[in-house]
Image 1 (cartoon, helix red, strand yellow):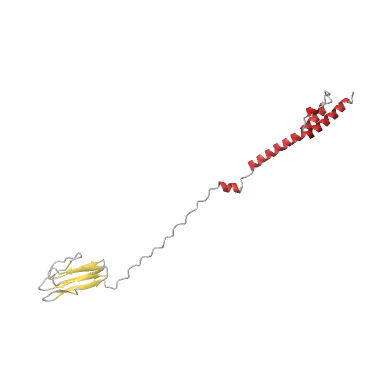
Image 2 (tube, one colour):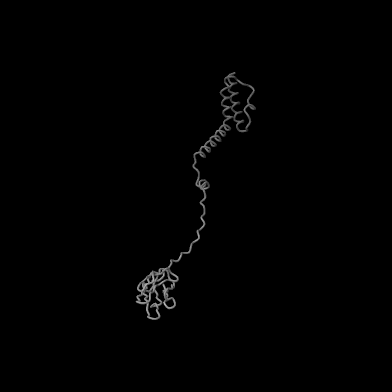
Length: 199
């Protein structure tokens, strides 16, 4: 009677090994004879052996999945991912090059004088002498006369000048802009005429 539990234990262990190898459940090969307390420990061992490979594989898979998840959570983003999220730099179109502007060349300094003098001359037929003068821009022309008999004056026909009529007198005008200007004695307009050239 005391060997019966040992035989049942041996059969249970063998069944557990067969179940582990063939994938059959322990209930299919468990013998019908069960003992209450002696079979409890072998059945526990058999259950452990039966569940061993599957449980181990399941635990290993779960551990690998957990490790993969943790590694994904803690691994910093790669350079490729960072480069993908970085905004692309805008390409700037080349600006058209402007041609350099020529530097304006100042006009050469005038070689003409800055002043000229014109006087009345003649006894019967009066004239301005000289009747044509040339000055530089900014120059001044001075007219003068002194006659005991005939009075004179000077006036510009195309510039603002008009002196008083007198037997002796003078007048002057400064010309700032280049050009040709005309003057006359209003008492003797037929003979006392002349020009001022400013250049």
